[in-house]
Image (cartoon, rainbow over all chains, first blue to last red; front, side, top):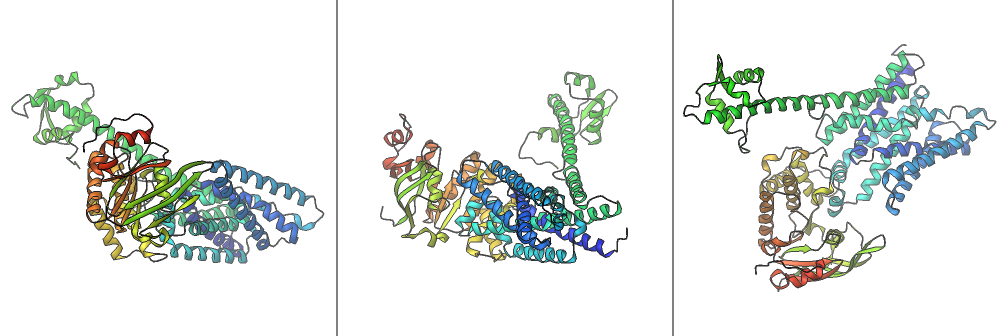
Length: 366
Length: 245
């Protein structure tokens, strides 16, 4: 495979742009706890593609994507309608619309496949995506939408942020929350529709969620999160394309999604503040420190009974206390809290000071 | 009281689905009072505040702030929602949340600048949270989060403050800090309306009270109407609260 090949470049740039815009918008979906919305929208887009084909008979991707956009939007507003007008919870509404629209879309696809029409083949690429069919015109469209999205994001950054954090409060400040909400949702729908050709109906929501979920692990700032998610998304697109191009017959969409999944996995394990690994390390270190301090405070109790705090005591005295080992004694000595000579230990002034302040909340150590 | 009426509610009726939550509420709140709204769970206390603020749409009735519709008087009003109404794991800092209080005055698109940041820092100082300005909000205790919410409302520099259970789940230190700020607001001539649960502290904290249980039971000065009779009417059981008058 030649990585300077024109087709390859088109696909790589296309998937990178797609990954970036999905990452940006996915951050908002994740923070609004609307992770499943993307899945519902992408599935809801399928009947639109089929109907657009039935009406126009064309395979031209822009026409089909317009159909996808319309049915995706219809699905979204039905979901909202169900949530506000009935007692159904949002997950039920999402699941309902997702499967209904997808089922209807599949029905139409099988119907189309039985038609005596040479053009019909190829519609099923929208199920799992086929990046190889990306044309430079498609990439231009993606770039324009991404640019527009970026512009709107920067323009209404403050409004987006406050709506995500506290919608009711936003309303009392006089902002039209419905407008902001529709704006975000419309862009999410648009990004999903753009990705259908590349990643497909079934896997599209992963493009939206994976980079955002990964990015959340690394930062506590919204702007950094959005930028990181865009970067992760773009890299997923490029890596995925490279891998699928160098291994014949691997379809690009699933590979991109798996690369994005690797980003998530790595982030969840290795992020310094929220990652599982460092959490576990911190947890174990805390436990060890606690064991040390328990031993120290036990020694402190004994030492308190003497005028001279550094009076040596026998190590045997500690046998009443279960939590100590040779190793804890060694560590305490390393920290300069005690000194050990032969079978005796004695507290140092530092150790005494430390032990007397152990349970004092107002005494900040380290 | 000869003070002007700050908030006037007429025939307010609100319902979720079929059951009315608030029924035909008429209420006049004079300027400069520190008022508690008390009532049992489900009495519609939060709903009353949210309807006044236009977050919920009433079936009937109207609200006016200093004689004009609320929509025209928004900048006179600040709101402190229940602490539990937002996700505190949101990626942002204490200072950033408080700065959100300036967004209303900024309007659409315009970003907060030095002036807004300074106002937010002053508000943080007032609630004793300045040392925590850069702290990620999930790393704050419940009481600290409540103070951040209070600071965000203080930044708005409003005339009327609505607070939804600001003392819920906070420790004694925060409770005292908050009530001192509320009393300061009253001293400055502001009107403060608080959804409150702890009946014991009503006479100590507030000078005005509204009893609510779907309908308005009573409203007026604490010293006049905070008695066993109204408590019994509101809570439906015989009440003997020792009220030190």
